[in-house]
Structures are given as structure tokens and as C-alpha cells.
Image (tube, rainbow, N blue to C red; front, side):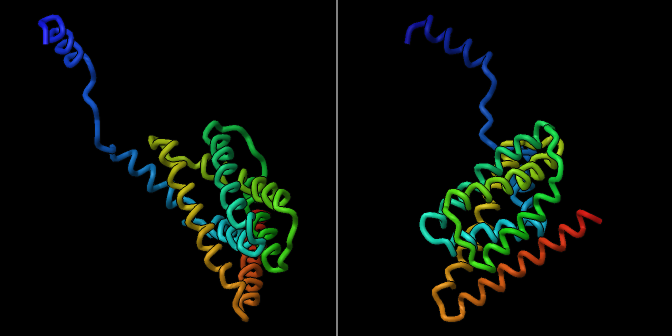
Length: 195
């Protein structure tokens, strides 16, 4: 290496900031906080499991379309929450999602996949907004979002797993009961929101 190149390399090494290869504590906390946010609220759990249940009942392609549509649109709702854009009726929308998705499972409602994805997407906006508006101070919005999207996917997978029982003799009864429980939980949360 020539002297000018060595000098250039020394200057670059001196003035450039050191690379930080370790995740900072606040960032790791953001991912964990985001992951725990949906699973710490029963209203979110009910609706997100119901998305997987309904997708399983509807079969292909809904079994993967609904669990993909929900987190994608939820992330857009979260962005609205991060930015502080007003969205009225968030708690009502979340409660309504559990009521209607639970009823769709309980009564084995079979709309076209596009309509089911649209309905799931509308509800996802409210869930995402709730997550985004509750970003803890000082935490990474990106990592917080990644955490709640991962948790949401896991809850959808739980619903799909339960939905796999539909092929069993008693599976239909289990799914109708699960849908009824989700709808009843949603009714409880709607009552709380109205109180």
C-alpha cells in the first residue's frame, strides 16, 4: 500500500464512528414490548386467534391470505398511531372485530376471500392503531412494530392450529364453540367500551 492510501485509510478510521454490533437495551426492550403488547390484551388475542380460525374454516387461499392481510394492514394502522393521527372509536373497532370474527367462525360464514380479507383489514387498522399509539417512550418504533407483528402471526397460527380440528368428527363443534367464545368476549369488551 502506498503512503497516500495509508494516510487516507488512517483519516477515515479516525473520523468515522465506530460500528456498534450490539443491540442496545432500549432496542431489545422495544422488540419485547411490541411482542408482549398484543398477547397482554385479551381483546387483541381473541380477534387475532379468530382470524386464524376463520382462515382455517375458509380453507385455501384464505388460510394464508387472512393471516397475511391482517399484519400488513395492522402495520399501517400502527403508523397512524405513531404519528398521532386521530382515529375515533378504536376500542369499539377492536371489540367489534372480536364479535364479528367470532360470529363468522361460530356460524361458518363463507364470503368470497376478497370480502373476508377486506373485513379483516378494516379491523386490523384499529388493532394496529392501538399498538402504535401506545409505543413506550424512548423505544424503537421499528422494533416495537416487529414485535407486535411477530406476536400477531403467532396468534394467527394458534387459530389455524385449532382450525385444523375441523376435519375431525367433533371438530366442527369445537370450532363453533371457539367462535362463540370469541364473540362473547368481544361483547364483553364492547360493554366495557360503552360503559
